[in-house]
Image 1: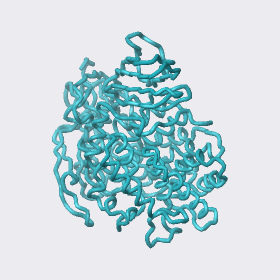
Image 2: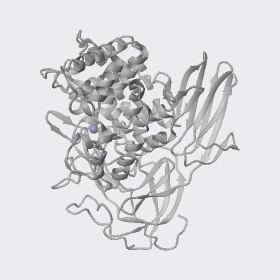
Image 3: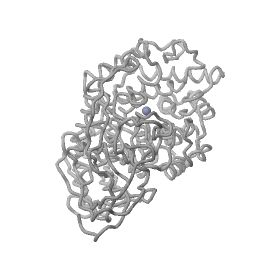
Image 4: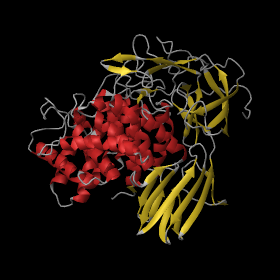
Length: 619
Ligand SMILES: [Zn+2]
C-alpha cells in the first residue's frame, strides 16, 4: 500500500487569520528566541559550544525551521542556516555527524542520529539546500555500516525510537532507489528496535515507575511506526496504530485525546499529568497516519490535540510552558511532600522555561508549524483540505499554477470560504474533509449530502469561490469515574478558574529564569467544586481576540447549568482536587455558568459529574 496523500512543504503553505497570529506569537516567544538565551541551544556542542550535544538542538530546529519558512522571516532563516552550516561542517568523512565529545560512539545514544537525519529532511523541504541529500546519505550509510558490522547496537532511546529513522530512510529511498543498504538498514532498525505490540500488557495498570516501555513520548511517537516503515520493509499495513491506541486509550486516555504520562503511563485519573512532548509527537504521528492511510479518524484526533491540549499547556505569550498538564487542574504550584504524579517532580505542572526537565522546551515548537503544513495535502486527483485552518497553498497542478486559500475561524466557527485561483482551466479536484460531528452541510448556500468528503472536480481559469458551512451541536461525553466533559466540534470545554500568575525569577544550574522566560505559579481564586445539573449546553460566539486561545477573550463559550458539590481534595494535598468527587450531592439549585475552550483555561475543571439537579432548563 502506498501513501494516500503526500505532504506539502512550508515553502508552499502559508498561515492566515488566527493561525498566522498564533505562529507570530511563537516566533516572538520562547520557541522563536531560544538560540539567543538558552545555553543548551545557544552554546550547544552541535555548533562548537560545550552544552548538550544530543537531542535539544535537533528538537528545537524541528519547529524553528518550518516556522521561519512559514512566516518567511529572513532573520529566522539566517539563524537556522547558521546552525545547519555548523552541523554540516562537523560531519566527519565517514558520515558520523553527532557531537559525541568524549563518549565512545558505542555508548552515545543513537537516537540523536535518527533525529538529526529527520530534521535535515525538514530543512531540505523548506530550503531546497542541495548539500542536504548527500549529508543524510552519509549519515545513514555510516549508521548502516556501524550496525551491520556489529560495532554498535541500538539501546535505550535509539532502541525505543527506531522508527524515527524511517523519515530519513524514506527520503533516501526515493532518491537512491537502487541502493540495497537502505532496505537493509530498515530491517536492522526494526530488528534491534522495540516491538511495542509485545509490550501492550504493561499499559493496562499504572506502574508508578520509570520505564522506556511505558514512556509516554516513546508511545506517542510509536503510533506512526508501521505507517512510516511498512513500505520500505515490504510489509502489509495492518493498522497497528489503531490496535495499540485502543489499549492506550482504554487504560490511559484523557479528555483531550492524549494519554496520561508524567512521564510514564498513568491510568485514567483526570489529575495525572501528560507531558508536552507527547502532545506534539502524537500530533506528528497523526499527521503522518492521516497522510498515509487517508483515514479521517486520524485527522479528527489530530484536531482534538491541536486545538485543546497544545494551547492549554503553553502560556498566552508562548514564553512559558508546563512539563505536564492535568484535565482537572485547580492550581499549578509545587506540592509539599510526594508529588501527585507517578514519575515527575512536584514542579512538573508549573509554567516556566524548563519545569522538571528541558526536553519540552526544545521540542514543543514543532506543534503549530507542522499542523500548519498539514492544512492541505496532495492526492492523486488534486488537493485535500485535511485540517481546515486558515491558510494558503501555492502549488502547481499538472503544469497549471494554482493558489488555494481558506479563510475561516474554525474551530471556533464552522463556516469556510475556499478560493481557488488557477491561471488556466484545470482538472484538479478539491476535496474537503467533513468531520463526523458536522450536520446540515451546505455548499454555496445549498444543502449537500457528503458523508466523509465533499469533492469539487475541476476549476475554470480565474477565481472560483466555494462557501461551505455546517452546524455542530455541543454535547457531554462520558469519562471514567462517572464524570463528563463538554465538547463542541473539535473543541473541549472547561470551567475556568480565576487565575493569579505569580512570577518567580531565579537561577538554577547556571540557567537564568527571568521575565519573560521566568517561572509562574498559578493560584486559583474561584470555585471549582461543581457538577453539571443537566445535559443542556448552548454555544455562544464571541469576537476572536488577538490571542486565539486566551481565557481573557474566549472565541466561543458554552452556557450550562452547574451546581456546587463537596468535591474534596486529593488525600494529602490542598492544591489538587480529588481524582473523583468525594460526594455528589448537590449543595444548591445551580445556576447558568460559562465554560470556555480548554486551550485557554489554564486552571480549570474539565471532567465533572452530572447530578441532575432541578428542572432541565435551557441555559
Ligand atoms: Zn518533554
